[in-house]
Length: 267
Image 1: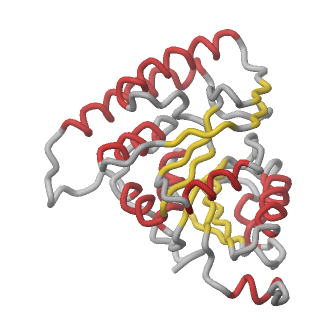
Image 2: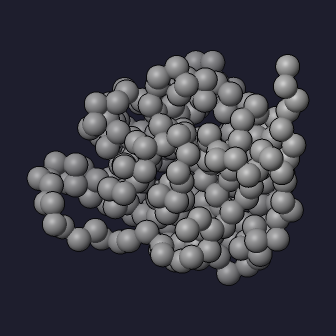
């Protein structure tokens, strides 16, 4: 058996999988999250890479990424000035070039062992594989308040009208055929928390099924979602998604917002 490639050799080869991590003021959680993610990816038998999208942070988030030690898993920075997790994920996916691409949250609330199952399914022909906390084999440690749980129930009911049959659109653990991810990301117009719904609905509109997999998920402190502050905006976002998906496409239409053109990270 040929020897395994060294870290430098591995990092110099084009990645098979790139993972996007959106980050807004994540200087406290990002170092630990990157350590976990890079350790997991370094054990995989093929080249991988991480793209951290600095979403208009005012803390040391960007500095943490630019000074991250080099290793077998390259970690690169992309900047996104448009506020919102959806805007950040879109910017990151558009900077990928690997055959497979995905994204996960900076807090690593979803156990990273799920990457093996997700990638195995993609290699077997699936095009969209997402973690689902509602899967019967998932293990979820949830410390959410009753109000937040009721809000999540209402959101799932509304999202179900746009993506029928998908039990959990919002788990921050999604993987795609790379070409499809970039094609769909280019069409995304939802910058906020509801972007996952538009992303999955557009995959469905292209005839691709959404494969849900079980995950181990822990409710991590520091969530930026607040029912009081975000519920009304999310309902509006879902309404706009519904209208966009039913509108006739206009070939020359100018997008509502553009991906960042900042030269930091991938060219």
